[in-house]
Image (cartoon, rainbow, N blue to C red; front, side):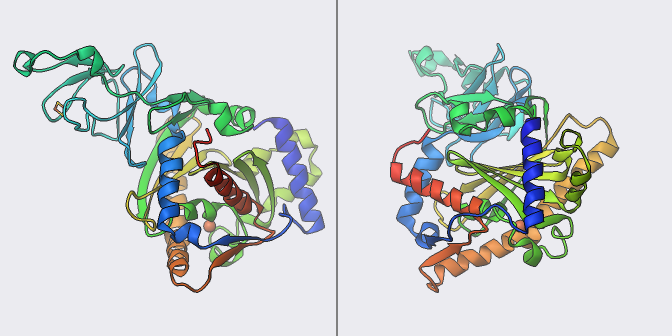
Length: 387
Ligand code: FES
Ligand SMILES: [Fe+2]
């Protein structure tokens, strides 16, 4: 984040504290419960948001050298992302052109210059070209050049990789970021390391993952003894960026800033900055590192969600004590959501299906949540890929 923005946010938080308020929406927002329960709505979301528009797939540094790759099956599409020979980013449907097997099965790997389909052994290279057909004389005449892996639009900028899960228009990262580009760029995530990731599955609608992170109203209640002693739930900033948003919260001791000249405040170390990158990514700056929570709806179940959590460190860990520090952060993040947030989310979800109410309410004090749901409405109304 740019220094001027850090100062501006620190001033805003101090002002909120002084006046005993926070970022507020103009009015409470009422949302039909059906956005969480209606199968037809869910089917359109899956098509519009998890097939047609580009999604975050991780950090560029995870694919440092030619042949480094990651796979992602969470969208329902088998995706393979690979660093090419000239350093270019390649993304493909991870589907063998012979009979459709998944060509690379591992979640990630390094230096695979040629890789072999596990079914009959067709061989591909880092550009997706079909390099070899075993026993080709028996298979018969085929146009190998036309049988490369099907390419997916992909782009990387500011250290972030985005892939469109179906073939289509090129990916424009700045358009996706909706004005957040320079500020995300200032963090220098190109140099950050993918430290560790984990995936988990829960019985709730995929949007509830984002809902969980977009307000601090629940901190003094649900997280009374865990997060609340550390974070000041009563002040937060909110700024919309097209479909995205920034929601900044602070550690309790931030009022020391009052005694410091603005340019000398160490703002970033005090803040958790939640970026909601539409539609399914909560990307959080956490004082000295970053985390990503990616939510993916299950292909067949409106109330089942797969979540991928990633922790990014400023550099690869140099020794065990650094490793312990990141592991501790990793474990705390997971424990908080697994013990407190997500079990609660499963209850909300069951509540939505109970017929108790037709609508849920987001308060004026939950402006980030309101913006997220307004963006979802807007994108659903567009009824075509918004990026
Ligand atoms: S399906 Fe891949 S080689 Fe047959
Ligand atoms: Fe929470």
